[in-house]
Length: 469
Image (cartoon, rainbow, N blue to C red):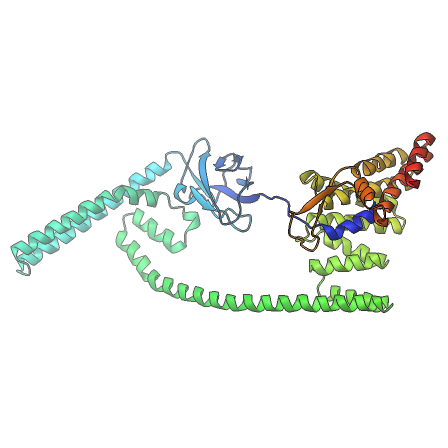
């Protein structure tokens, strides 16, 4: 069976498993020093409702969304609280990382209304005082003959209209101020708003004017542009270096292959040793080194590298499963059968899961068959014959199922143009193919040997007859 799978590796390709977008955030209380709120229910479109945990955190899962797409808040519920930052949270763009990008801010029920009234009264008094000040200035100009009666009446009417318009905006302004969360603003912003709330509007204005926010904003925008341009240059340099790095790694691998072809495995091994010394965090280097060390019986080094593949954050699931399988082979070779069984079991679990996700995909099915055979052989070596029989039977049963093979193996990214055959059908269609024949023969032989060991001679005979044919 293993020989069959080796042949199939060149005919298949890997498809990423479907993923869901995860976003994490937290629920906090307004103006509390970032105190969290547990037990709040959060409902977003296209995600299951969640409850903030004891630390105020929650995790949303969007099965059909990806970074950059918008999601919409449907509801936030917490007894005794009301939502403060509805405008900021009602529609959110999903981030590239796992952070939602905005926290949910709640306030004890009634606090917002009280703050609105307070800010409204202050703003109304300030607006009226400003209106009276401007009216007095107009009267002074009229008395000093700086304005004639008609000019005075026109300016007064315009001033009255402006006052009426601004007074209509007081509700909106009061609501905006009431929803400010001092935990998330700068010290200057907080100080200015507190001065405003205390009725010291002139001092609040002076505080903000003293830092000249317009000028500082202009300086920041210029700095952002400068950093952006520098980042583009750095990104271009990094991309060029990465390309050159890949090219040199390819050269080193080619050199190692040529040393092997020239029957100088020591020099080939030295190339992979050198690659790992250069960068032991690069997944491609780790993967190639693991394969080389395993295939060339450098067991100690392979046992060192394979676990690094397993814990690598960029390793795909099939690579993790294969790395566990490699560890199983290495432990088998070095005589550590219990460790081999654990490693083969991990590989089996992963390929069983992948096979369930795409039951007709030959890469997953083939590697699952390898897992059955490896587990059966290991259980046999450990004396667990009944368990070994179970896995060998699953192996031969899987060989009867249809496989999806690419009709054009030189086009690895095309899932179309494929044909379906079982291993048995492949052997019947291509009896001259030694790989298909050997794969089936091994499966029948294993079953025959196991039934023999268990004393089931009639069943063993049946499988040995299949083995001969």
